[in-house]
Structures are given as structure tokens and as C-alpha cells.
Image 1: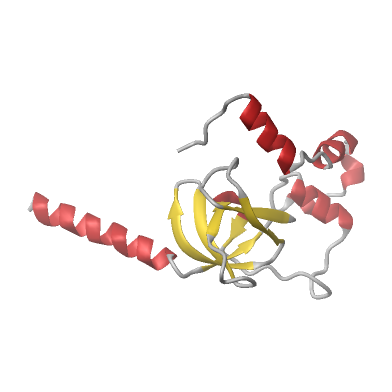
Image 2: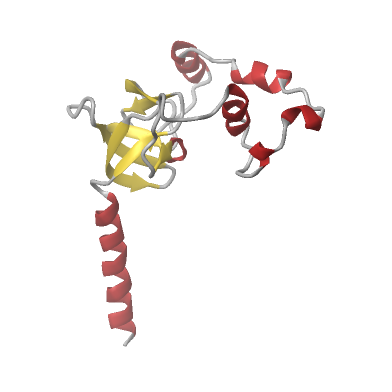
Length: 153
């Protein structure tokens, strides 16, 4: 009986993994580096943008191996947290303002956007300043080399 149950669990797990492969995911961040390996310090193969469609090859922990629809000759890894299962529609069809987008980027949950930010007496200038920071990839690579850091496995 235990043997059958273990076989069932194994087959169910394989079925779920196979189901995820070939599924579409959409980039939910402004830009996303497609990496050669499942590591933030790995070489960037290309960059995809907000709303771009990616085909899932396989999922492994916090990383998803994908092929961009815009360039099917590239297969690489992206951080799974930057992907959405729902198609992202941008442009004129979306009715939102800069304040709503800013609040969403700061992680406010659905429902909080109905309150007026003026009533909160909050200043998000510091958060906006931090969000504007970016470290060039070459600087990150130099930091990794100089610190003799190893890629995560």
C-alpha cells in the first residue's frame, strides 16, 4: 500500500512539473535580466521588459528557466518572483494614475488604493529615491570577482 502511495506521489509531482513546462508567464517588473544560470551573478543573455511573454521550460526553487517569445533562440533563467501567470495589459486600456502605480510598486495591498494618499500624511520621497538607485551589472560582477564570491547552487 505504501509503495502505491509513493508511486502516486511521484507521478503527481512529475505531472505538475510537466504541466508548468510550456506555460506562459509575463514579466511583472520594468526590466528583467535573463541569466545564463540560475544565479543573480550569472552572465546576462538578454533583458526582457514589463509585460513580455515568456515560455516556461522548467522551474527550480526561486528560479524559472524560460524562453522569451520575442527571441525563441534564447533560453535562460529569471527570478520567479518577477513573473506573473496573468497576462499583463498595458497601454490605453489600463485606467490608472501615477499615484496608483507608485503605491503598487511600494507593495500596498489591493483595497488600500481606494484611500487618498493625502489623508495618510506620509512622505514617500525616500522610498522613491531608493527605487531610483541602480547598480550597473559590470560593477556587480567586479564586486563578485574582488570579493572572490561563488555563485549560489
